[in-house]
Length: 387
Image 1 (cartoon, rainbow, N blue to C red):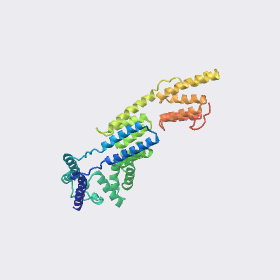
Image 2 (image 1 turned 60 degrees about the vertical axis):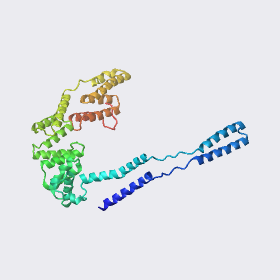
Image 3 (image 1 turned 90 degrees about the horizontal axis):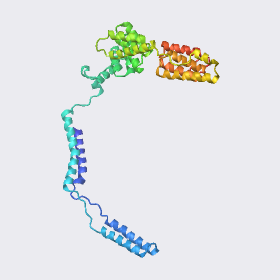
Image 4 (image 1 turned 180 degrees about the vertical axis):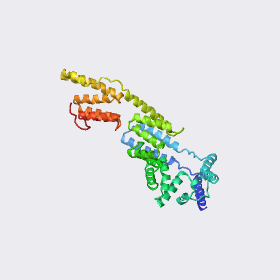
C-alpha cells in the first residue's frame, strides 16, 4: 500500500510542475528587441561618420546610407506585438498534460487491477520448486529436477528424466552428461544408449561420430527392432558414402516403421539419393578426351613443344569435365597421371585434394585414388617425381 501512495504523490507532483507554466494567467513576455536594434543602428551611424571623415565614402553616399539607417531606426521604435497564447490553446495543452500525466497511469492501474494479480506476492525459487509437477511448465520441471540432483547426484532416475529433455531443448552437452550418468547408475537400455548417441551427434552438428555410432550399435544389440538406432546407423552409412548399404538400411527402416513415424520423410529422401548415387557409380559417364598412357607414348616421338601442347590440351579438357562430373574415379586418376607426366607436381597434388573432397573417407573410391596417388609418389605438400 505504501508503494501506491508514494507513486500517486509523485505523479501529482510531476503533473503540477508540467501544468504550472501553461495555466498561469499572465505568461511572461519576451524582452523587446527595439532597444538592442537601436543600439546597433546607432553604432552604424557612428561608423558611417568615421568613414566620411576618413574620406572612404563620399558625402552623397554617406547621406543615402544615413537616410536608410534612420529609416530602419524609426521602424524599430514602433510598438511590438505580444504573442499571448489563447485560452483554447492553453486548454488543449493542459488536457494533453493531464492525459499523459494522469490518464495513462490511471488506465494502466485499471488494467492491472482488472486482469492482473496485484495481491500475488513475489514467487522465489524455493516456491517455484515447490509447485506441483502436474501443474508446472517445462522450465519449472527442469529446475525441480536439477535441484534434486544437486542434493542427490546419485539419483539415476533424475538423470534419466533430464537427458531427453535436454536433448529436445538443444542442450547437447548436458544431455550427454545426463544420459551417461543414467547409464552409469541404472545400467544401459536401448533408449539410454540412443539418447547418448543422439546427444553426441547433435554436439557434432548432425554428424554420426564413431562414438555415437557405437552407442547406437549397443542399443540395437539390446533390441534389434529399436528403430531410432536404425535411423542413425542408416544416416551414418549415407554420411560415409556407402550408398548401396545405406539404401538397404533405409528401406529396412521404412518397412519396419509405423505409419506417420517422424523419420519417414527423411528416410524416403535418403533412399532416392542412395539409388541415384549407386546408379551413377554403376554407369559412369563416357570417358571424355584425356591422355591415356597410349596417348602419351604416341606423343613421345613428337618435338618437346608439340608433345607438351598436345598433352596439355587433353588435360585441360579432362579437368573441365571433372568439374561437372566429379564422380569419375578413373578420370581423376588420368588427370593426376597427366600432370605427373607434365612435371607439374603442384597441380597433380591439387587434383588429389579435389578428388579426396569428392569421395568420403573410407569409401572404396577414395581408397582407390589414394593407392594410385601413392604409386605416382603424390603426397600433399611434397614434390612429385615425374614417372
